[in-house]
Image (cartoon, rainbow, N blue to C red; front, side, top):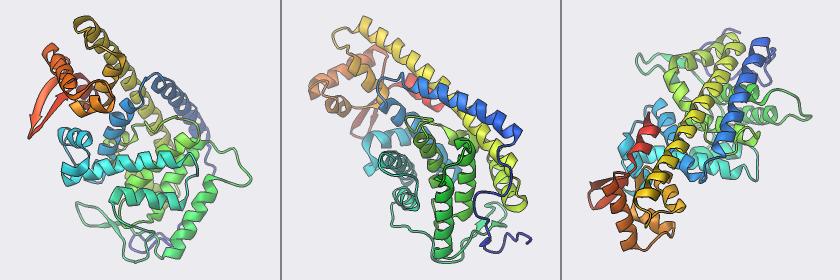
Length: 361
């Protein structure tokens, strides 16, 4: 049957695809991607406080994943919103923070359950802050934002969509188990989830969260710290062309290779970033210890790197000092040039500019 992008793709084929997924080229790329993930996993384990990665690298993943959906916020607005909670944030920053919340929610859920339709629903509800469910109303079409031309019409009918999601679950957890490489399975999962397009909104962000959660569940990462959205955003045209290639021509190999390259390159870049952050932490540790030994502690340095926008409250929460003493600590660090005081309304932030520059580079 000829694919018609203007008609609901109710004939979206079930998984597994009727093609050889693990071609010679795919297997070669998968080996390189696994090696890069192992390096990242080992490097991330050297970070003394995992919140340093969650509040820094993962926040950038949340920002860029949202930017793919044209939800744009500035770095400063986002870091301030993350420091304050979303109460005073603009709408775009709130939505980005909800992506991070959804990612963390999924990570916590993995302790007790696998990736299922119920988890997909829970994640999209956090992202959109509303009680979304699998689509029941017809009429969803994906269009080119510039031309308005319809590029894809996903399947329709809640029962059909749930059947296709159930098939996706069976593909993820086959019985009996098979030996398909987990990274290849992730690439297929991502295409199928996006093609099912189960929700009225939030599908892209939910799908990108599922990629990271799958890597964690499969033991390829310990925490959800892969910076995948940067790669997709820089190669957005190739990303959408790859999805269309599978839909319209059954071109699985180029799509799987694209996703494997995304994992490999992103893992290497993130590993290098973590390495630079560790070196920066050590440099600041030595500087504070030598120039301000009275206030130095290992815990203080970790607080300074847990978030680029530090506040007195962060030191109180870490039980490092009482309010006046905490204020003195931060002012001392600002006098030394370790931090830079920045007033916004009634709040004073102490910006770790070196960490900030590392995170946004």
